[in-house]
Image (cartoon, rainbow, N blue to C red; front, side, top):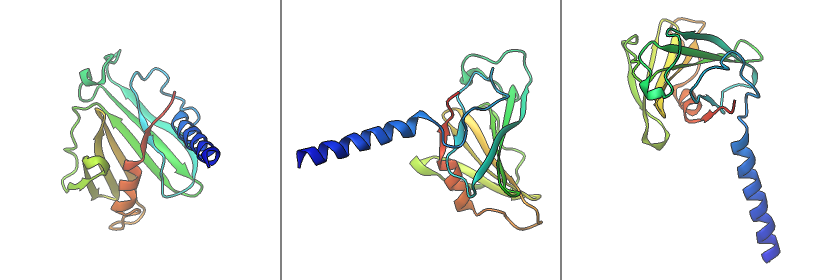
Length: 169
């Protein structure tokens, strides 16, 4: 009996170790080699992932501060697109902590895992779920193809937000 418990414990511990060691959807992320801050990408998406790539990395100042907390609004914007095998595409936009969501007039407050609070909006064929995670502002953005029809439910986008995991670079 002790042997069975010991073997089960070894499998559990080795499984936990593997889960933390590598992000599930990206082996390497090119285009942000000099980006000094930790960033997270979702491990859950409502489709199978084919491609992960940097769409925009705009850095306004010459050198970003060492600490994310010292970054100012508009110092940088990093936008990563995660595409599927069809036309599925979700953007994860990262901005400094002081950057607000004043662009969206119809924000709806939502509750995420761990009691975190975010906001959701749908306007002009664009779904946006916004949250702050460990000092970085994240916008999960989906562009829809038909006016007035959300591509994914709020629940699906909340699952995406709740799955944000550190990318090892």
